Image (cartoon, rainbow, N blue to C red; front, side, top):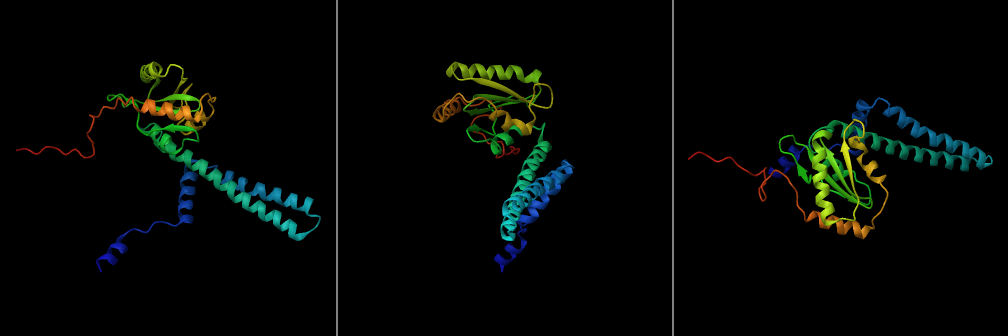
Amino acid sequence: MARSSEKSSTPKQPGRFKQMWQVFQMTRRYDSSAQWLMLLGFLAPIIVGVVLGIVLGNGNGFTIALWVVAGVLAGVLIALIILGRLAEKAAYSQIEGQPGAVGAVLRSSLRRGWIGSEMPVAVNAKTQDAIYRAVGRGGVVLIAEGATSRTSRMLEDEKRKITRILPNVPVEFITVGRGDDQVPLHKIPRRLSSIKNTLSKAEVLAINNRLSSLGTQLPIPKGIDPFKVRPQRGR
């Protein structure tokens, strides 16, 4: 009886289609053009399929039907891809400007060939400005989260540490934001992918391992988990 009551009290997870509908609703609230872009992505392949079926089918109804079906399947795929991209942009817009937002991108959205961590390599405890690091075939990229006037020195300090042990590895800076010479949060993966490749995969792994041994400058004492610290009771 206890087990059955536990099962009944467990909230039921929404189905796949319901989840997609929720994602669509969230995306549409952020971007009112999302539904029209998805509709265009769905209809365009169908129209192409009908045209190709008529031109190449020579009046054969079965061939035309196959082209139409192929267009429908392609349209569904393209619409889902558009939804995924817009949903990701909408999700990141909700956390943009908050501490740790860059870490969320590095954890979930880095493209192939890049290695990043959700934990920053340096943090200013007073301002909550942070520096994150990504390593890929384009070299080492330091990503600043915070005002440029405050993070410029932090970026240079981290670059000096890297060039001291890896003098021949290129180091680039990215500052996240909406201002001039800044990169919006959701465009970080695209910006990293645009950097010219100069390293091999083996070199990327070796450099990442070497840099990981440097540790970080987080304002948390080593060996202490802040989520497990309990206040001392008065005696």
